[in-house]
Image (tube, rainbow over all chains, first blue to last red; front, side, top):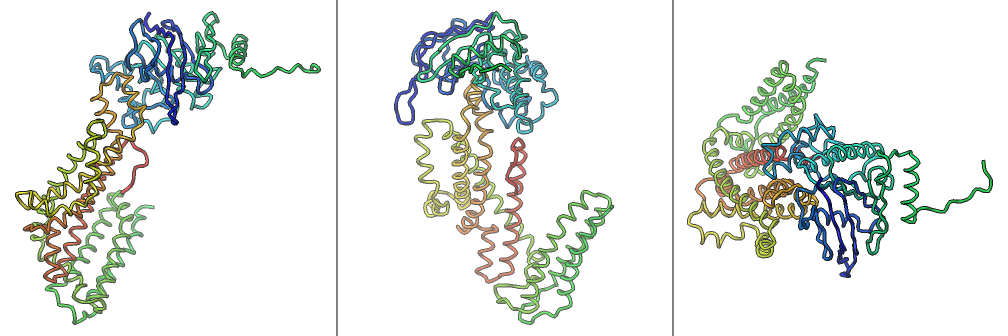
Length: 260
Length: 318
């Protein structure tokens, strides 16, 4: 199986508007097994999105090493699909043309045109091929964006809080779909989120990060839990409490003075 | 209710009839030179015939009838303005006779001088199209190069900023020396007027594209040139059309001035020439031809834009 990412001692600095150096990521080491689903979670400013963008090759890290299946990552490439926070569909193209973009750009469209219809079917957008993005709802646009990212068979799919702007029900639907695609296509997925439930529901392992400087605080392995991680199961709730405790959002449990 | 649009046609028809009645039966003031024929009456009769034709055709083709019902009041309004003008000039001579000729005389120009007007229009269009196309191509290329290439931006953008804002017509003294013929000089001036807004808005359109679009293209494996063609340029299109619109308006302005450089024919030249001859009926007729042609060209531009930018919601209406 392909799609293993090895990150060792990665460091990234930014200049803030005042010209001061800000350490966005410090000494990040992480091994992402091929075919696993990893969530990066943490409060804003912890560098989770930056880490994801470095994996995508959209940002460059000054320190450390990062490889995909042993080869160093030097820039963006079609072996790593990327889903943005807002769908970023090309709004001058129809849904079909958006999904076909990657194949056309690489000159593969002629051989693999059927793949476009297949992807549209997988994300449930059959019949919307000729629509423009502004004619679809936010959830449908994210589905199209998912199809666009997957059409070229990437080894890894990187998800940068793609469901953050959707309503709760649409969100859960698309979570299920992504989980299903992950299982069927047996690919590696790395997702940035600030939603603890989403991270637990979907992941094999959760990387909890803390800000200033962005570091990995703890990595939770959920791979022995039976899948799917039912949202209402006991394991889910225990896990949730654990993640919140790591993030210091656990709160204090008050002992009741009397039982009802 | 079938043919309900017909009731919208009643008022416009009445206006046309009133205009005709006033033109025919109110005595003319003696101060206005008499036209050879009552051309304004001919025109009003033409409008009447057209309205009747549309009303009748509308009965068999409801969409046509509805379009007519929407537009008829407006055209009746225009006609009533002409009627008012007719009263102020031909009937009462309340406006200075020399500068405000009677509608009979103005519309007479169309009847008597049409071939010459059309010839002038053709010459103007040739000049306009030559300059316009050249200006658009140059503006598009400059804008795209400035927008996508760091080095071009560094070396060329300052020149665009310094030279662009100069009104094209201010270059006349230099252009006349540099170009072999009046036509090429005039076309160059029009091109210059179109080039500047097209360049600036193309470049700014590209500069304002959200970075994530390019990132999305990169993660999908698109090359730089593919990204420019399929992402950069389409994303900048709305701005480009704004530049084209500004440029087209500037080209009309420049056309009139450029035709003073010793053109043989041309609608701007015609207006100026007739003004010097104190032939104001011809001036007004020339203005009408000019206005209708510019209107037609802009409408064409907006049609093209609506076609190209179907993907945009809430486009500016023309």
